[in-house]
Length: 309
Image 1 (cartoon, rainbow, N blue to C red):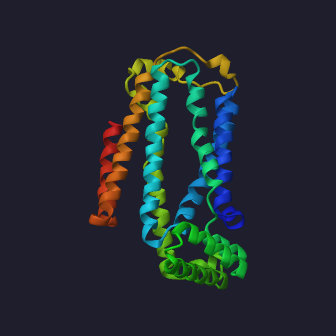
Image 2: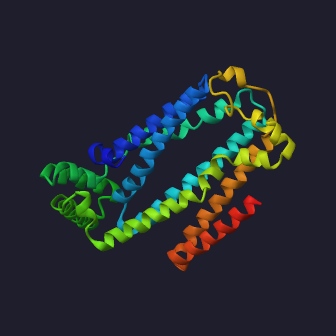
Image 3: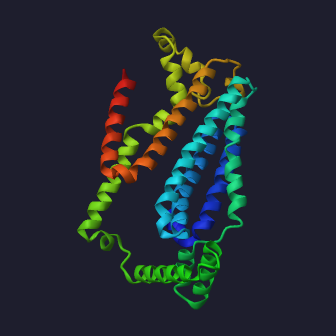
């Protein structure tokens, strides 16, 4: 995603990612086997990887500096809000006992990505990418100025000119600097910052939050079932696609209603994450990053311990 962003631009990569997401969602909705379902999910995973890198970059390069952090935080809030809405929609399909409702659950994921495609068709490219691609030429400067004027308004002329000079200076500095990995990592403070960032990202993944979010319905279903059922494999048989990956969808689809409550309870899990995201957004400037991180990690430790019990 990083290399493609440099070549094709932020807007193009967001549209490409959205197209892939739409295709993957439709592929999952019409899947006829576990293999086809996995293929569709893989396409969706690639799309998420592309968009998750391109969107924050686009936001940071298109908004004024004083709003960059806030709008990227809002982006994260709406991602979690989307998870809440998705879980509520899944709950509605489950409670309504819609035949083959799982196809609708997976296929409707393509609707937001389709809306993103339509929306970005009317949005400009990032002004910094325009300068970077144009190599600081006069044509690129004029195009970037037009984009900034469109984004900031014609009345804010001084702000547009100042931001354009800053963007041009940054692009020229990047072009002069060595882009080799060794050159980028040679300053000690860069290595320390990178190591800290990588460690925090690894920590975020290794605590298992994605496992809890993706498999919360299965975990809840297993926790509500007796040990004898688990040993007999009854719970696993009620969950589609968990066994016999060489069979067709038609062969493993059943009319079992078990798991409706657990599917609906996943909305509470997503809602709790949304509340935590809002709390972090409100407290990060008041309490500071480090204290909030330490308190959050303490809460994660206690929560995982209780979950294991």
